[in-house]
Length: 562
Image (cartoon, rainbow, N blue to C red; front, side, top):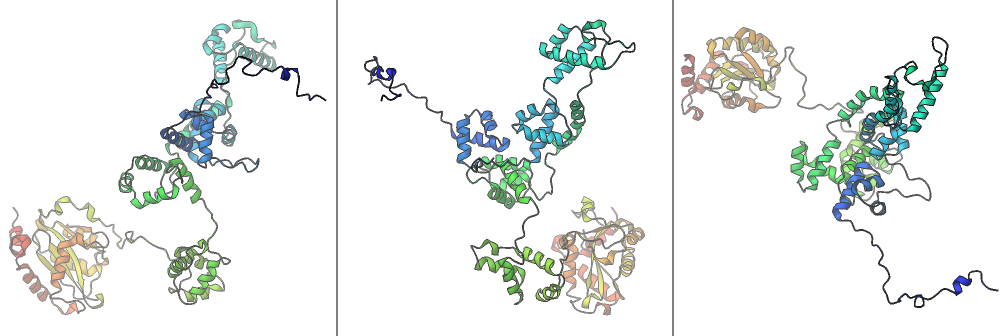
């Protein structure tokens, strides 16, 4: 039986030589696929990082879909199909959402805005629906303009030409208007058809669709959203603008130090950012880094240290031998270098212990920890201190600039030197220009009232032109600084915490005074005459800073006003 595949056409088929075709002739060359340069591929990766859509990124840089999908699949930019299951939707950050609403407010259509942004239309429609915004069809604006022109008395043909609507749109609008007119009777209870031209009563001015009103009300909200597309959670975290700048500077091979200087960040921050959030193959992409940072920052997260974890048994074992959490954390990383479950920070151990220190375990944990505490103590910045004074202090930064160069006489620096267990003290005052020393006798104590009275008594011996200002540290003995200022007409300025160099002359003088008043001695045994003797001896020493003149000689010249 003859095979149905062997028919007459097959039997009569001619060979290439019989058909006049030279078999030695070369076949027509096949069109080879275009080769893209490394710069074009890099442009595609940057566009995909910004848009997040392979086709839209390919269209933006002029690359073929085949090549773009090949690159995306090669570098892991596409999620696997998982045997027919839909690929997981990529996360969209608040920046893209805010940009979409801005475009929607401008064009009025979800479809048009989604296409312009390169986002899925269904997702954009869900965003608009959740925000209470109705989408406007792209042709609605032309139809609204046509109805407005017809309401002013313009003819149909002229209104069509001016608004740009088609005949089918005019017919649809006419049918809709005719139905609307028939529903509402005129004052004479007569139905007025739509197609009577300008002789019919003018219809009411066409009101914009509800979506247009919603978009108009939404403009202000979106303007505020665009003003801060990504509200900063804290200055600790890098923003998208900073990551874009890092990408530009890092792309031109700037160093970590120079990038940190431009951004006002620490070089370690820039180094960790590039190390943590860079793509394993494509390098540092700012939008990819922003999404990776937001994903890593999401809370709550699974706890690393729980009672059923292997590290918990290790912690209990070391607590029994009085190890600190820092010793546990560091030693566990050395003993189990490849076991990630045993790598936790000492802060994590502390937090877990404080959580567990309730009920029956409270006593055991309090006994095991060196401090004996079962709750976290608040940590304060040492530079942020509670004010010791009722009256507000004036910081040294507000001191007049002429005080700094010592050109203007009459500005003083002061402090206390204390004796055994800080129970006794002597007040010291140094004039900045002449280095002239005055000692304040405090026979009973060094409370704020005693120091105030002693300073007033000492400063009152000076002429008015030498009562410029007094710089002191933030000791509690100056709590009555306001009363001192009112009595002597001298402003008091306070140094920053732990900044003795801001009273350099006074600190140097206090060191010299320790030759006469050693530490850990009772200073109350010295009388006012003793203090005057010591001050005179210091003021009669020649100083190199004064051209080998003595402070007494320089101060004597200052007593006579120029």
